[in-house]
Length: 435
Image 1 (spheres, rainbow, N blue to C red):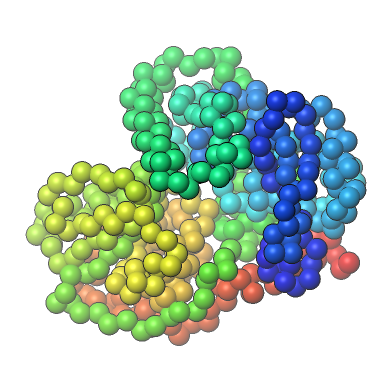
Image 2 (image 1 turned 90 degrees about the horizontal axis):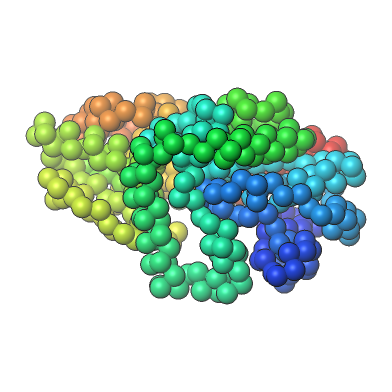
């Protein structure tokens, strides 16, 4: 959006804001941000983030009037509306856009609308391909955020203090408790599903699928998201890999020494769906075979996990910031992205590529689209044995990584924000024509 604003396009941002006691839906101007006019949707639909949906009915409430959306669109007069999430926005917004013949495009950053928990991973940490007419949704969302908690998280007070040390600690504690409760309760609840709630989750999916099918054009950020969305809705669009303003061409040739431990890096939360435990299992199997010439550096959660026999071979560094990436990748021989969920893209892969770092990426990760298997990276099946075999090969033959690094540095690098914006602009023209 900032890049579009720099190109002198008129850019408007509408975001789901706070709730007040009147519960009347309004749209009010917020502070302008670097040339972008910002508007707050007051009293939006609940915004669950990654917390799940406890009461589906609250997420399908109709706006009492379409007038607020009609007035807003008449004021800003957009040529096109680009939606980045369905969270918080009412169906009536899309109905008004359709009535006014304003084209709408949607970027597939996540699976919200299809999956209330966003990532299509069920309570058994498996890819969800059948929600059993809402029954699995009931179990998966048992410990979802309550509306009072969502209300608080959308408040201006929370936004002021959400990055404070205390609030971060409370947030991490809440996530851990939810995870532990989910693990304990999922087995008990699977056979005790509330049938009324099951019907509500069916209606919720139908509600969001009807919105998705009303959208004119889809910007799929990977072939992964294209396949997933096309399984659920009849839609049209194209694949354009995403980027962010921090992506620069920092590629360098790296030195690999087979005598030194292979420096493996994992960046992300220590969660099943991100594949950390799959990677850990692979590495433990190497230790059992006597393969010890490696070290894993982990950057992600603020909290730690207990390590056993592998404790001398894995270092948990905790959280990192984007400014740390240069030093992290300087000390990385290979980055592993072992996700078991259908990861929509995976910025960390692009960031590593921008530093010339070879990447092992699971078959489920959207980022694999810009990797040529065996040439500029390695794509593997999300299986601990297969990953262990690849890592063992790299431990013994660093020449594989050296060649991949060379290939990365020699290829073109069309992944900057400037190039991305050009592709998005071309997509807009395809949808609305020249204006």
